[in-house]
Image (cartoon, rainbow, N blue to C red):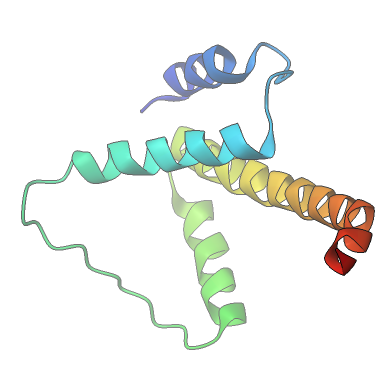
Length: 109
């Protein structure tokens, strides 16, 4: 997917200023992108992971090193999807903590 197509997809999904983005629909959007990527594979085609890192830190370093070598549009899309996933996961966690504190007294009933 090229960057312009990706932008159009994002704006269609969330609005021009991402005003319709929520933790739930961001997760659904990212899941659909991943499913589209998987659907482009041939049936029965093996998915191979060539990961040499054995720790999370090594894997992250390798990921970012590989991103620097990617074509610009691919790198932007990959980093944008990673960033929005992490950002909205943090928002979701914040909401969970807030609502847990609101409903903590319900455990007594």
